[in-house]
Length: 399
Image (tube, rainbow, N blue to C red; front, side, top):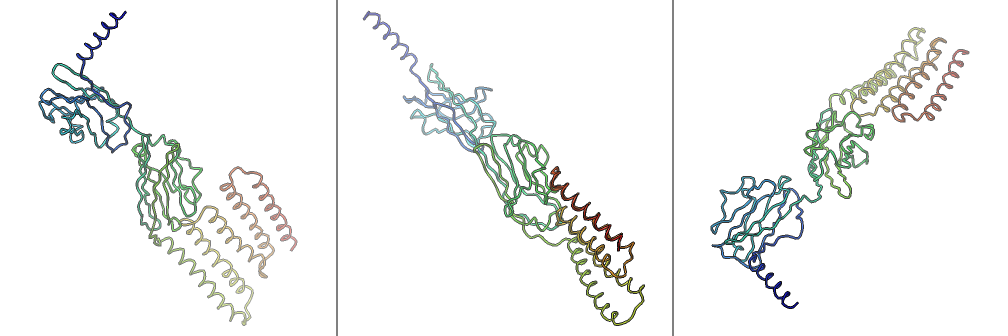
């Protein structure tokens, strides 16, 4: 029994001596982020004389030479061009048995398994080192944008992640001062129903090719004064999150704004002028035809001009609901003034009942846009307005 044990130990000792070169490496994969650096460990416990040494670093998939140390020095001419100036060998540490390699400016193409092969005379041994991409998420693009009202502008946001941009859980653009969603991008799809009414049909991302590159910048068309402020591009994916901010400054007046201001000034001027004309006219006896002309001028001119101003204002600043309601109220004011005028005929008073019909159409369209399929609220309001129209028409008919 003792004899057998001695024989086994003898043969194990022979194997150990014959295979005395042991190359050591890391215990597991090495995680690295794009653009970063990673040390690939490779060493022996017993130093090897340089004249007997050859170290070869290769990729296991394509057998590409990453670095070669031979004849006492590195052989850059044997190195693949992709690793030129990126694979650094520590020549001064070779005498201590350290053959580690520093790989810089890592990209996704560097992911894989590397082989460190050490040759000593007639012996050789190797170790494998795996590089994998660590989970990461970063966003860049923060800047300040100067734009004029009516112009188009771009708010930059670039996403860098181990996950393809179109597979990210959520990318959102928000206006920070009002905390409203400007644009929402979820797993490769834009969610138009989440866009705030103020920005609807005015924001979009770039084409799919740009999105795939990580360009999630937002294009904002027809810039309005209300767009001034701070925006945040926020990216979420599981426990990872990152963001950047963009600020819009220096918004000037467009030609549309100047036109609106001019029309508003005309309304004030018309009202004041007509009032000054009416004061002396009230002291003079005029026939009904002249009074009717003055009345129609007072009723139609300011309100029609203001109606046009609201439409123009809506093109630059307003919501659909604001423009529709304000414009409708301005038109229905004409009906209201005609209804109470002493010179308005019974037929004209009946016609003034159109005020209710106009308001009905406006409220219905606005509620459809804002509340969508909330039929109960819509039917209640429409019913109330319809009842008001019937009462008004009966009252007008009996007058």
